[in-house]
Length: 465
Image (tube, rainbow, N blue to C red; front, side, top):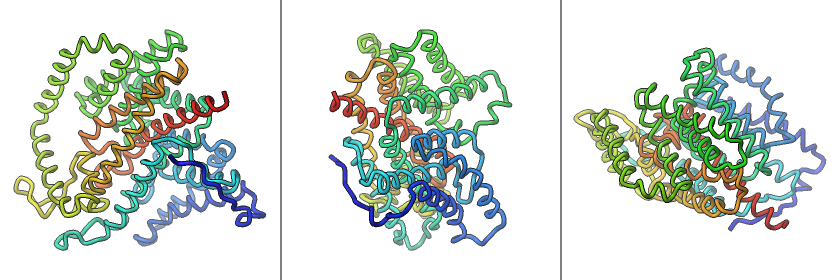
C-alpha cells in the first residue's frame, strides 16, 4: 500500500512565489507542447500561429490555481467543445491534462512540502501502467523486424502519451477531488452537457450538435459512460426527486434509441452501454434479474448474432487481423513491440492475399502487440482493483449521489471492458482512433479516479469519526 512520502524542498525553492512558479511552469508546458513538433518537422508559420493563439488561454488556466480540480472540469469541457487540433493531434485535452499534472506536482513539492499519495489498492497498478508505458517506448526503438521499418518516433511518443495521460487522469482525479461537491459538479456537468447533445441529436438541431467535437460524441466511451452514470443516479440516488430520476431514465432510453435507430445500429454505441446498463440493473434488482437470466442469454445471443450477421465480412477480416498481429507479437510476447510498430510490421504477412498495413481493431490485441502480456495484465489489474473498491463502497456510502455514482462506475467498468472487444476505444491506437478519440477516452479514467477519490473521502470520514 502506498503511503505519504515526505520531502523537504525548502532550500530548493526558497525565495520563490508559489503562484508565479506555477504560472511559469504552465507557460513552459504550453510552449513545450507546441514546440515539440519543431524537432521532427521544419518550421512553419502555421505552428507559430498555434503558439500565439494559446496565450489567451493562459488567463483561463490561471483560474485553476486556487482550485486545481477545476482543471479537470475545464479539460473535460475543452475536449467536448474546443476544435483546436495542433501538430501531432495535440488538442485541448492533452494540453489541459499536462497543465493540471504540472500544478498538482508543484502543489505537493512547494506548497504541501511532501509527495502525498493516497492509500488505495488502485494506485499501485496505475503507477505500474505508467512504468509499462515508459518500458514500451524504450522497447519500441529496437529493430524487431529488420525487413520492415517501425513507427516514426513522433508516433511512438504519441502512443506513449495516450497511455501515460490515461493513467495520469485516474491519479489526478483520485488526488484532486477532495470533496463530494466537486465529484458531483464533474458528474452532473458531463451528464447535462452529454444529455443536451442527445436531445439536440434527437430533434436534429444542427446548430447545437455542431458545437460538439466529433472525436468526443462519436466515441464509444461517451455513450457508455453517459448511460452508466445517468442510470446509476436514476436508479440508486434515493435523495434525488422522482421527476429528475425519471428524466435520467428517459435520457438513458434516448441514448439507446439514437445509437440503435438513428445511428443505424451502431454497435460501439449501444452494446457497451447495454453491458453497463445490465450490470446496474442486476445490482438494483438482483432477484428479478436472476429470474430473467434465460431471457438475458437469449437477448445477448440475438444481439451478438445480429451484429455479426450485419457485418460478417468485417468480423471475418478482424479475426484474420488478430491472428496476424498476435503472430507478429510472438517475437516479444511478454513486453510487446513498442508503440505503433506492429502497424508497419503487418505488411510482412498477407491478409487475404494483400500486403498492407492495418491495425487490429481490438483494444486487447493492441495492448498485447504494443506492451505485451505484462501490459494487458496490468491493464486488467487496474480494473480488478477498481471493481473491488466499488464492491466494498456500495454498502458504506450515503444512499444519495455517492451510491448512485458507485453503481454507475461499476456499470461503466463493465461497459468499458466490453468496448475493448470492438475497437481501441479505451486507449486509442495512434494509427486508428488516435488523439481525436482521446477527447472521450479520458472519461473512464476520469470517473474511475473519482471512485478512488470517493473511497478516500470515506476513509477520511471514518478516521475523523
